[in-house]
Image (cartoon, rainbow, N blue to C red; front, side, top):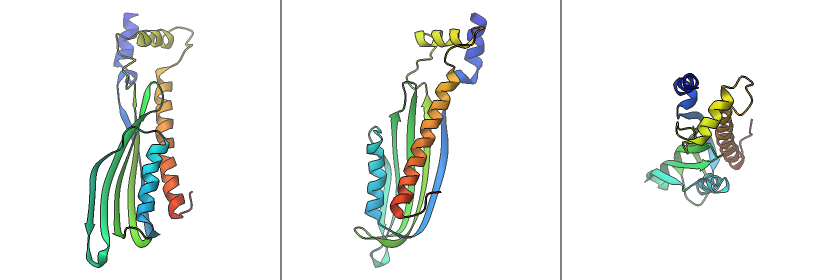
Length: 177
């Protein structure tokens, strides 16, 4: 059993990592700034993310009353008992007018990631870790493998990022491919 523990401890399964899949959305044409920001913020609320953080927000008004906007939004949510999903959006918009559709430019970078074992259920002193270790290294091989926890987290992270991107495209009127 001690050798099995050493193998598990040195394997990639014991590491707490964050994985990210960035999606980039670029659009030039007519869009409603206020409506787009409402779609993004409501997506966080609708999917039951934790408190929404806005570490960066710049609204610079230029000539002709049009503005340039830069922002970052971030939040996390518990996807399963073992994984937590994060969603970050870095945005930059040009020629923005509040309250009405305008002919401008949008550039969004959507990053989703997950943290497996955020509750430290697989620490060496936990009952769950000992149970999983027995199931992974038994000759029958029955039981849940820790890799299943990681693949579930990846699936949830990709679903969240693609869902937001599709809602943005749908709002602006770009065909979802």
